[in-house]
Amino acid sequence: MTGPLFPRRQAVARLLAGRRDLLVVSGLGAPTYDVAAAGDHERNFYLWGAMGSAALVGLGLALAQPAIPVLVVTGDGEMLMGLGGLATVALRNPGNLSIVVLDNGLYGETGGQESHTSGPTDLPAVARGCGLADARTITSDAELATLAARVQTIGKGTLFARVPIDPAPLPRILPPRDGVYLKNRIRGALGLSPL
Image (cartoon, rainbow, N blue to C red; front, side, top):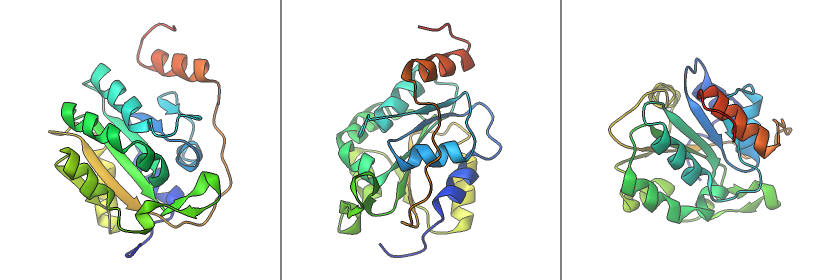
């Protein structure tokens, strides 16, 4: 990977700063710890053991709640496992969905092996190839600030952003892990009854 590497926790905190009604889905492992480190919230839905499905869970929420912005925060390894989901996201292309990939070029949850993004795989190019017109790599603090503002809004189509991050391991900040509790908590935040 070339170019600037953002400190992951600071980048996620910046994306979530000043959030209003934003719904957040976090991918397996470090992205969940990063979202939790920014502050547990009733509109956070943390995925545990669902590798490859963060973008599709976010799509489901975005389609079910079209007036509310939905942010998926995931990692490069999780996104690589769910690449086929990008084609489905692009087919529906909801303007209230943003997918942010924290890319450290590693499979952090399985021992730190290099991921495909350490080589020739360009995730924004893959997203564009699937049909997502707004797919970008964040390269500056100004671009990160623009991204933070955009994820709080509803655009013309789904946003896909790759944020290259420092690969240094960080302490795990564990949020609630009970799936039924998390499901019912986010339903309650949306004014829906528990299931």
